[in-house]
Image (tube, rainbow, N blue to C red; front, side):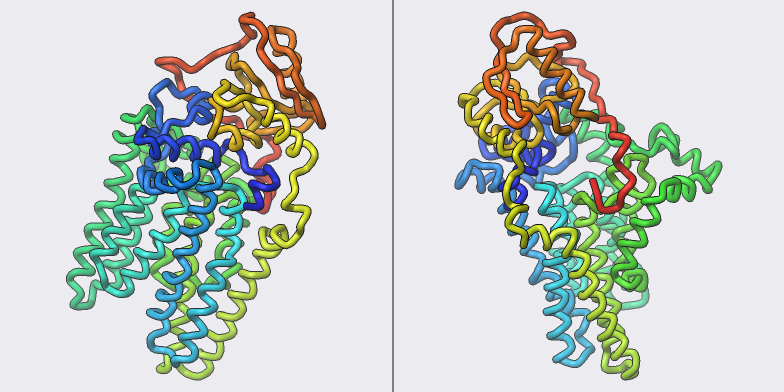
Length: 492
């Protein structure tokens, strides 16, 4: 709840998911005005046309108890917490051949490293995302695979495919892992499950991307961020067949990309690379490393939380093999040192990234500008149409018709914005100040101003230059990433 208390969680993305899940709670499609206005999607667009995540409907009952965006924050925390017993069971399977005391300690340390790991802390700090389901479902699939309970493996895989369209690629990669592990055994059920996942996962992703997302108002190829490889998937494949070196160029064309790889694997002493389970994360990691979008290259967003279950499971499996009573004492001693070192590094890395902020009382308090946004929001009546600053939008979604203040005036009755502190999606605070001057010159009146925050009210029907509302046939647009993004591994 720190992000909520400090007013650091934005309409992108907490407000978007709040509007969407609230739609499910009222048995409607998950429509978000914050999303479709800002990105110019046509009316009728739902969040299923952005990312195919019908699993989010499972959170609707939370809104029957408490109709508030914080329900999502609590729900995500509970879903992350479900991973603790799962990673403990994974450790129990992996250390089955170790001494009982070693296995017990391994389960305790694995649970600690998972729960306080920096990927989950970062994901919690930046708000709510589909990763809330992806993390425990991935752990469930991996744990049930270890236990050879393939019915539950398939169920978890299906739910993963309903969590985000690209997670079918993770499912397919796990199918390959199962095939590799059962190829010389009598485990026919494991082989058949592996074949099913290997084929079914990518097919599910392809169906969602090609047909289901467009059917919900989405734009085919909207998230294609791989222009260095080609204009679309087919073009990229042809280019790679002609010049495979393009793949290497795209993977290392920015300094942050190798640093990301070094951080992900180096903080775990490269141990995940010794387990076949690490193959599960390759599709998701390739999406980020090959991407031309700088937002994908740092660890300051939620993307690493989807990799964390795979990385930690692979690490535990390697340490479990090294700790077998059949291994020499020297190998077991090295496993103990590596295990303690891995947990130590994970916890040390978590301190500056998330734990330290939780312990500092001032980090729970909003700064002057954010506090002023909260005060101004209280002046807006329920049900009013509003254009709001990104940081205050989640506090208005439950009681107003809110869209984001962005580069296009929307002609709403109220506009709540800032003049001296840059907010998404503006590139500079001057752009925000210019927007205020434009509105004041064309029918808006200032109702309230404090600490750079301005609340405007529309007093006439005079059109604002550039005013536009998405309509039928609107062509979706992507945000232009500011020039200062993509230069620091630890900052968004």
